[in-house]
Image (cartoon, helix red, strand yellow):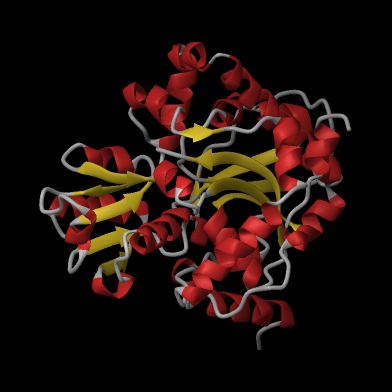
Length: 355
């Protein structure tokens, strides 16, 4: 007989399945792709669980400066924790793993956040890792010259991802009924394979699948443009609320390390991206081509700690509700909460900034 906890997990995942998340269920034992742990360094801080057990942190293959800190072992050094970095192909997979309790901290997009929070998954955003721009885009084949050509064509996208939200938002902006487009749910590795076989006409995706599709396709629109049309998207770090309550110092140090690496990039993006060591580490963790890393890094905006506090403590919760409302209009979530403020916290950012 299932335990009450497993029943709750099953119920949440079943509800999320309606919007595409249930297709990527990760068991409580964890079936994500394991990445090698970063080299251990002497810890300078401790969290209540840091020296007691392994902490699994879910990451994805988006290109951003924090991949350098991840490769260097900076997070382990600052927190004193034994971190297992586990790679996932989509936010849907991360949410399923976080829901199971196997993964307490993870990197997802704002659309998966809105979908999961609408289903009352006990998570909160504690860091905005990037405001998405040209690092996510809709790539099309030579059959498509203008938006109207998408009608009747097969377009692949990971459901309930930031790119799914951007695709639906773009179609709405172009006054194209999404039902007239054959939108299929594929993970990035599956998109790459389908693109190479010629099974799809377009794909809205991120790295490394984006660059691979761009080799023979062209960009019709990027998330930078869609954001300007009123539908901005974000990359985020989320945490289970029960873990956050017990491990505030771990999250404070995690935010501090992330902010430090973001500052290093923002101070001189060209020099940072020209550093062969930085490029090599980012390329290895993301699967991107080294020669593409500089351009990909420039595809997002990375808020510093002061900006983080302003965004998270400001209208961000309202932006999440806006995303959830749009997803409900599209039939991707069943209900929208009155407020998403309980899914957003700025306290770890503020602590990291010394405020």
